[in-house]
Image (cartoon, rainbow, N blue to C red):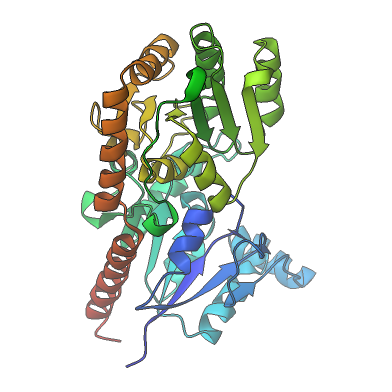
Length: 390
């Protein structure tokens, strides 16, 4: 019996920080999948053969005018993208489609409403925020949530946000990030010689990651532990501003900015570190975390976490067991918790062991892929029953 065919739609396949999506798409076993994308990036980092690329679509001016002004069709139709997408799905005989990110789902809503096969959209964090530059976006997002037969969320907090937007709770499934544990072995970390404590934060350099809080907390920590080091791994729009803040605080000699690293390089840094710090916070435009992937990888190696009560973080970090959590933007609280882990070797070691065990119990990659494929099967079976077994 042939496997069902799944189309995985991702506007860019893939940005460097989208390793979690690559792991998911490339690990399916019970479904055949191919990727539809507008732009192929990082091909050496994320090799995948079955990719359909459709970039800028050429369209006949007269046809476009007729569709736009006479038929009043949406942009996805009059710009020709609808037809290209339909052809790609027909060519591959797709049984269903998984659209990554809610804003992409909103863009594809006219297609989703007309296609005669089931579609699921997964939400990851920033895609639940309002978009002031797109009038009516929230209304279209609500329409999407009403239209879809199934919705996936990376965390319970995102699930609640979707419910608040009007999504039927019964159609939401948790789609956790899976971590390949063999790539993140657990190690015991001895006390550092001469007080050379190492803290690490790995993330995209954006506002919701709280990088300025990390630097201010670390600057205060250096007053008690002058040989400590902080690594801020990653890249993004706030890189220059973050480096400037380190200079203003006079701590550039103790802060490393290695840029964007691959998973093996990050693993090595996790093994060298003693604490993972991640003071996420919600932004003015309501951008929030799901569950940070780098945090899960760090915990898998046995790193205890000091972070905030934000988004999906409390779903992965058990307060007082695998890490310590404070309210968003509480720099004094963050500093106190970092000091607590540094000053109590037994607590730090026990939290690290508990973090590694928790990751293996709740975020193991194979188990999460099996759960994802069970959702696909559920959606396909329900759809076919509702459409006469077609």
